[in-house]
Image (cartoon, rainbow, N blue to C red; front, side, top):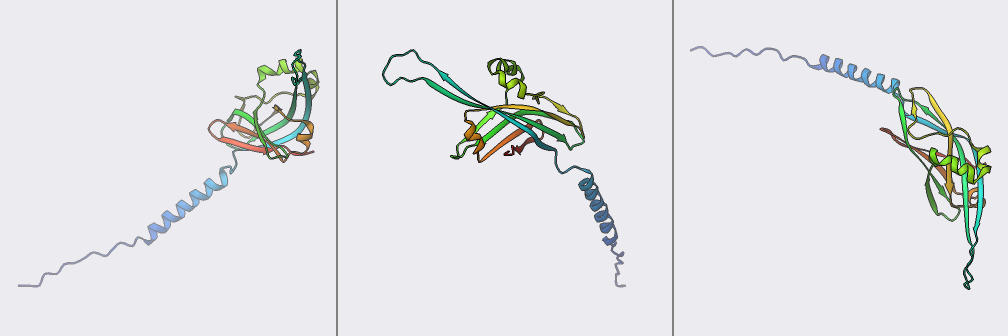
Length: 187
């Protein structure tokens, strides 16, 4: 009987197809990296004005040790510019701010709503000349475009607290993109 011989075909060389796939994947990643923006939005505070208020609530009580109530409120009017860096529109969900006082106490507040602005201007007429067009929640910013407007903030603080603050930030929360924070610069 003859010896059986099993002929084996040559093994295909996978080096060339593997290199081609690697080059194609590298080109795809490079295109995504260079043509996709790395930041969704840029925030800038272009102007800031403040209005400190000091209100004394008189009491008619004749009880010993009962004193008038005092309330210090600081209104901060910050003009914020939002630049859309995406190729999609972005939408503002919420606007908040945080103040870190000299004693390390932290106060967080939400920006005043559009419906409340008129009442504040009547109550505190000195706010009206400082105010501008508000930056509103639900604002849509188209790709490559920007939105700019005033954000009115109310902090239970004095002007001295504001001037000696450790930090103050504005956070704009976008639908589908999350929050972005910008520092309010000191004068």
